[in-house]
Each structure stands twice: as structure tokens, then as C-alpha cells.
Amino acid sequence: MIQKCGLVAVVGAPNAGKSTLVNALVGQKVAIVSPKAQTTRARLLGVAIEGETQLLLVDTPGIFEPKRRFDRAMVAAAWGGAEGADVLALVVDAKGGLGAKVTAIAEALAARPEPKHLILNKVDLADKAKLLLHAERLHTLVNFAETWFVSAQTGDGLPELKRALAAAMPQGPWHYPEDQVSDASERALASEVTREQLFLQLHAELPYASTVETEKYVERADGSVEIHQQILVERPTQRAIVLGKSGERIKQIGARARAELAAITGRGVHLYLHVKVKPGWDEDRSIYRDMGLDWVD
Image (tube, rainbow, N blue to C red):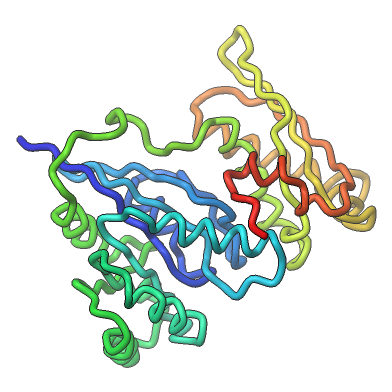
């Protein structure tokens, strides 16, 4: 059989379900997910297999109107992830409808030369009568090669989508071993899993004012791994929220992150969390570098 391999850039507005879709197509978790918008901060590659085809799925941050340097870096990462793609996949929250953000992204895609697929996601939750109207309106803006109605959460429509994406890929050798599902290191994954718990467990605004640095990642002789992380926040009041009363919140964050990492890596995890107040952490070049983001003026 002839091998095929190609790049699919998954783009869209915040909270469209891009990371959930990438995880579902890969067949396991490679990107963190939360109900909050802008959970994904940097480009991440998920590797999926369909027959003799290796699909390199670039999960990108949601595209929105940036207001600060960190926002601009995330949006730049999103458009950067689309460079050199064999297919651009625009993911739209079919439940949420077509707002100005979706329209602006579609208009930006229209001039690009790559083949484009429209993926209307969350169809299990959407008003069925409006689905075709959404698709028709977007087709007036962009010449999409294919349109898909899927639910990344339930799996509806995903087998057909995956086969079609594989069929659109060029011939060529696979770029990754068959058992590799992501280009992220375990160290980077550890930071993301803890950050996911910040999004899931804390107040609406706090996760956006925080980040996670993995300071130490050591494999022990028994095969388990010891991980030391710093949760960076901007103000002492935020540190108090992360810690919680008598340290209960940080214990819950650590326990759930530890269990998640153990399930993903298949080995014991010893996770140690420390909360540090670092005003202006989002203006620290080293943090951008560690996240895989470019410093954007």
C-alpha cells in the first residue's frame, strides 16, 4: 500500500470545539479541553491514523480580536499553524451560530489558496433547522471543498470526516512512528494538564490570569515520574483563590491533574504544586518560549 501523510490546520473562533475534535480524530487525549474559551494557547500537533494515511492535525488557539501582547501571540500562533497545510478545516460551533468572529475568520480564509473544509460542530446541541442556513451563509464567503455536520463530543459524523481528510492528503512517508499521537513532550503535557484543572475548577476570570511552568520532571528508578510545577498568578488575592481554604483547592487541582497524567502516561505520577505571585508574567519572554509562542510586538 502507498503511504500518505499531510497537514490539516484546525482553525476557528474560541470554544468552537477544535481541541475536542482533534482528540476525537486522534482517538485519545492530546489537547486539553474546558468549557471556557481560549483554553488552547499554542499550536499543538495531534497525529491520527486512517488506513495508510497519517493525518497531522494542528490544533490552534481560537482566533479573536487581540487586546494585549499575549492575545496577539495566541492569534499569531493560530494563523501560523495554518501555514503549509494541505487542508484548512474551519470549525464552527453550530449551536452558537454565526457571529462577527466566525464571519471575520471565514473572510480571512477566503483568499487563501489551500483547500478548505467547513466543519459545523456540536450538531447534537444545535437547532437543526438552522444548520443548512449556517452552511449556506458561510459558502457565500468561502469556496469550501466539503461541508461536514459533526459532533466531536458524541462522535457523530467523525468516521466520514476522517476518511475524507485522509483521502485529501498527498502521497508521502509518515512523519511520526505509528504509536506517537502528539509532538508535545511529556513535560509540556504535564503543564497543560494542570492548567486544564485551573480552567475547570476556578472562577471564570482567574485561569486567564494564570499559567503553569513545569520546573522539574524526573523519572524515578521505579518507573514513576516526579513533577514539580509552579502556578503563576498576577496578584496575592489570586494566589489565595488557587490555594483555597486550608489549601483544599490546590489539593483538588493536584489530585485531578495527577490522576489525569497517570492515565495518559500509564505510570505513577508524583506531582508537587507551588503557587507563585508573578506580576506581569505574560510579558516574560521565557514564558512565551516555553509555551511555543512567538514574542509579538
